[in-house]
Image (cartoon, rainbow, N blue to C red):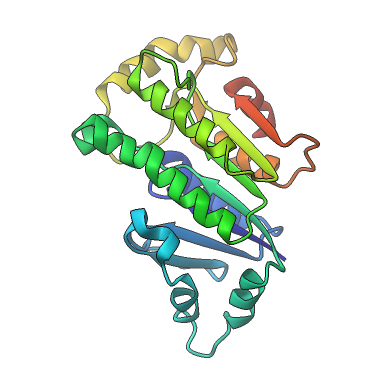
Length: 239
């Protein structure tokens, strides 16, 4: 039995990723972790929610068992507790400084919450961790956004997952909940690269393509302990 853990489902890639995981027969259950439950029902979907910065202290077992009055999920809980299942963790947590209001709050989400989820996933026995980072991620970058993404990648490497997949998409295309003027302008200016199929690592990429790439990599038998994927490779993997 293989279980998927996912956090960041309210985002562009996260929602597409959730749908991909639910549709894929390789995963028996998908456990969504977030601040609040999604307005979504599916026979494979289990949801746990609460104060994300305190995730590692959640009584996740009680939350899962509470979703079935007949105790249907007790075998799953026991299998997780006894490390008798394959666990893959997917993280697309992220925000913007504009949304949260400051650099400190941005760091708390894009670094601290990602590491909290990763640590919790490792504790549950996750062998693979797949993280949606950003093009240009570099802890030494003068650009704060890229600097935080790079620092997050570096700290994920220290957790010792059997496999770590880092995905650095370029400009994402999809139906966002909020309007981002800068992205709309960038999308318009970069669309010729998409039409002409030029600049494969910098041209815009669809959210569902990134999601498919993550799932395909998670289910592959990689011989390495870590891979970093740019948009060009994701286009191939998510085709």
